[in-house]
Image 1 (cartoon, rainbow, N blue to C red):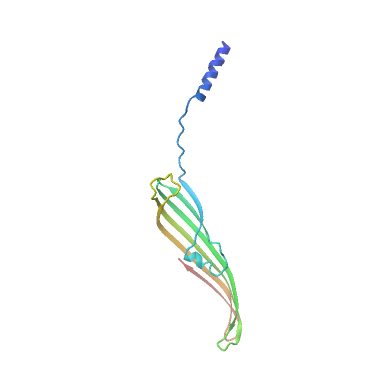
Image 2 (cartoon, rainbow, N blue to C red):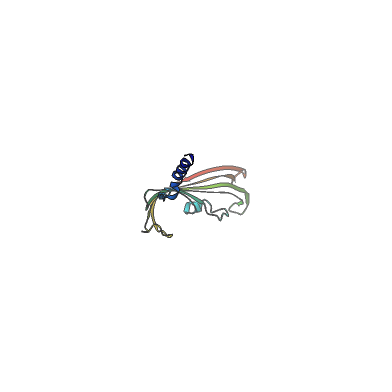
Length: 165
C-alpha cells in the first residue's frame, strides 16, 4: 500500500514535466538608453581654441510609447579651458606690457524629440526613423586676466562672463 501511494505521488509529480506549457511572449523593453558622439555650432565654439579632437558625448534616454512611436531626451556637455598670454605694443610699436587671459567656455545642449519609425516591418535590422522636436543650447564664456594700463603701464585685472541661450 505504501509502495502504491509513493508510485501515485511520483506519477502525479512527474506529469507536469511531460506536458507542453505555453510560454508567454517576452515584452519588449519600453525604456532605452544610448550614448553617442555629436556636435553643433555651440559645442564647436566651446572647444574652438583648444586642441580637443574628441566630440562631446551625448546621453539619450527614451521611452517607447507604441511599437512605432517613441519620445526621447538627450543632453550633451562640453567645456574648453584655456590661457592666452602675449606682449602688447602701442601704435608706435613701443612695448606696453603683457596681456594674459584665462578663460573657460562651456556648452550645454538639451534636446527633446518625438520619433516615428517609418520602416513597416519592425523585425528588420535596418530601421528608418523620422524625428522632430526642440533643442535648447546654453553657452557661457568666463574670463579673467590682466591688461596693462596704456598711460601708467600698471597691470589692471579684468573679468568677464557672458551667456548665450
